[in-house]
Length: 145
Image 1 (cartoon, one colour):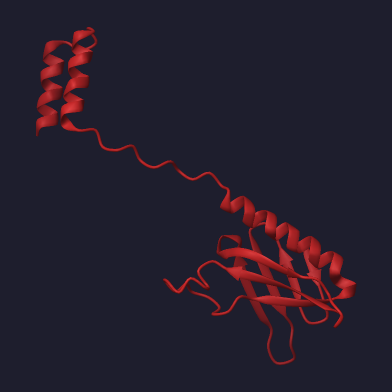
Image 2 (cartoon, rainbow, N blue to C red; image 1 turned 90 degrees about the vertical axis):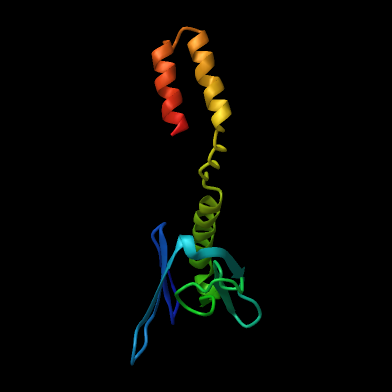
């Protein structure tokens, strides 16, 4: 998905936002992976005729560990004529950021089983006939090492 204004081209491929700012002396290109974007701020064109999208980077305002990359949150401006394409781009990026934050996380690891609990479990297996006495003794020695 692409959105263009007179002074900026913004592309979004589902994984990262690419902001290209063409210029006579230099071309600046910023690449923002969705994982680095914490929020997207939309400002509709007002009386000036211009609107903006600001990509708030994760950790940019946290004051904690500094992350590599730009020191300020990247933003782009656009005119009333480009509102529809920039609004669609904004919604697509917001959706991707929302899916990333709602992505299932790995459950916390189960608390370690105590030695007594493990011995009790092995004894229960032996009582039910699922372990022989020699197998129980081997497993017990292995635990006690």
